[in-house]
Every structure is written in structure tokens, then in C-alpha cells.
Amino acid sequence: MRLRSIVTSIFISLFLVSNLLPASADAPKPGQSMTHMKTGAGLASTLEAAGIIMYVQGGATASVIGDSIGAPTGQYVFHIPITANKSGVQHLGSNIVFFNTSNNNQLQLRNPVINLKTGVVTATIPQAENKSLTVLTVTNLAGLKPTITTDKKANLRKTAYTGATLSLAPGIAAAISSILGLPENSLPDALAFGSTDVSLFAKAK
Image (cartoon, rainbow, N blue to C red; front, side, top):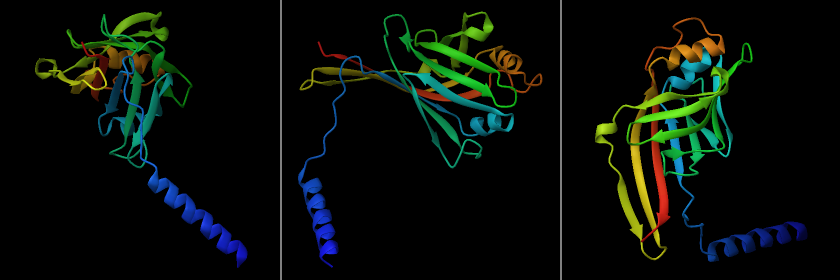
């Protein structure tokens, strides 16, 4: 009984302390810009049915929305740190990988760059002679407008582009199928890929 009383007292103390302490989080700082990319519902399960999984490498992280990537509504979510944005939104050191579980073939999209002026995403593909290729297209570029907010107290300016819709660039679906060893026409050309949000932080002037 004494042990139970001690344990109960400890839990009560921890509960009181946790509720007395204010919740806190680090505020965004210049250079902590991020791209959040989410695949469309159904893409993950379509790829999984063909034995293809996706993941990220380097500074990027990933999660899954839904029960699993095999579920009809399953979606990949990628969080990719932005390293620069003077000549396109750059993600140096981050890779998006398509991996064929049946033959271990893979296709890497290395250091993707989003050009918000032309509406294309380019990446270096080692499996395609290390060429920089246009891999995704922003399909709603004309209506994509930035939202700018300024936090004077924190001396931060945030420029946000939300809801950019993405599709595979012309010819990329065939290249993915070929490199991964999939049957011809496994992926339709200009396949809808998903959407992305870009948040750029800088010092307020």
C-alpha cells in the first residue's frame, strides 16, 4: 500500500508540474524554410500494387496519412528543408526515392528545385546519366499567389505558397517505369502526383 501511495503521489506531482509549466515552441528563424509535399489519394496504393514504395533521404522526413500506403486513401507526406531560394526553391541534400521491392531497382530525385516562375520541379537523377531533368509540373501556376505575413516582434517575414498541384512532367512516367523495370505504360503520362506548400522565412526589413 505504501508503494502504491508513493507512485500515486509522484504521478500527481508530475501532473501538477506539467500543467503549471507554459507550453513553448521554437519560433521559426530565417533559413528554417520548408516545403511540405503530399501525394494525392490513391497514388501510394497504385505504386504499392506495382511493388513500388517511396521514401526520402538526407535532411527530409516523411510520414503517411491513412492506415497504410496500400490503403485507397493512403498518402505520403514529405517535409523537405529549403536550403536556398535565390535561383529557385532549392533542397540541397534531400532526395525523393522510388524503390521497386521486386528487383531492388531505384530512381532517386536528388536535390529537387522548385521554379515558381516557370512552374517546374527539376532534380538530378543518377540513374539517368546524372542529368538534371524536369520531373514535376505545377499545374495551377497561373492561380498560385504568395501570401506574405510579417511578425514585427520576431523580425520575421513569411512568404507562403499553398496548394500548388503537381503532376509528373511529360515523359517522366515512362522513364520511371523503364528505370524501375516496370512493364511499359505502367504509369500514365502526366500522372497527378499531389500538392505542395512552400514556406519561406526571412528577416523583416
